[in-house]
Length: 418
Image (cartoon, rainbow, N blue to C red; front, side, top):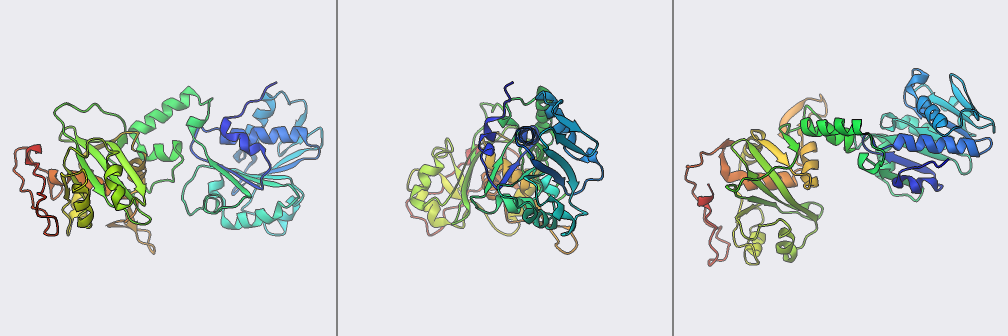
């Protein structure tokens, strides 16, 4: 019989010391490892594998049932003898299941002759357990596999697989869209989470790190597409990048007094000044409409004004401007187009600071994951005062250009936009 695997799993059939699959629900990563494990146990005489997790109170906590299901679906039920605690093949292959929490350096030595260790729910594995397991599985040609849904970038498994480069490590992020057999029932669950709880959707289905739900700044947003009424005008904001930070530009529309729709973005690290006009033009219409850019770089604004973006103006910044801008955005229903992947990531991870000693959330925003958000604040700054939407008929005074601007370049007057 033909046994199929998703395309993303093909490299994992090649030998490699460490193999990791991480991502969201419905990707099939556990099914791939379980299926591969069964095939090796059926084809390699004397093959030994241990499936480990940090805590295993009973065998029901393990992937034993999933492996049994694979054995049955492959027509190998007659080849394996399945007991309550282990699976044994006619070729003397053996699969066992263990919890790492209670192991010591002495007790784990019993696994030294094993060919494979599969760490399931690897986001829960402790640094101690990983340090015990890694040197124990040391038979020539042995491998350590790990599958997990990321929780925090500081988790030991993420630090090991995702924050170091080594030819001995093969790791891939896989989500539901890489699984050709993604079931319709799960698709409906995913679409419901996407519409109702973007944080949950990003973590559970897209494999992002879990957002600090209590600390997150924005809870009033979702990923969706909207039809923009003809009467709406686009608003543009730009945040300048530096050596390691991206330059970010966004386009948004105030669809009504409650809904802000963001439908275009441009993000890139290391854009030189002379390339900025072309880079910013990726956001359709920014050359023709007024835009607000970070006023900390007046010379950069001046350059862009003289090279194709004459309506760019400096954003207002000062004491309380960040808090007012965030407050205004929090009072709207923010809808982000699926094409704006970077802004979606930022909205899911933008959080208030946490006191490291007490764990309490403090009313100060982390200065991270905010380049697109800063650009969005600049784009809408003239729609509000102190975080409150201005009436449509209220006149706005347009500040003149800073004195270091070229005298023949006038500030763009877009009062009519309000």
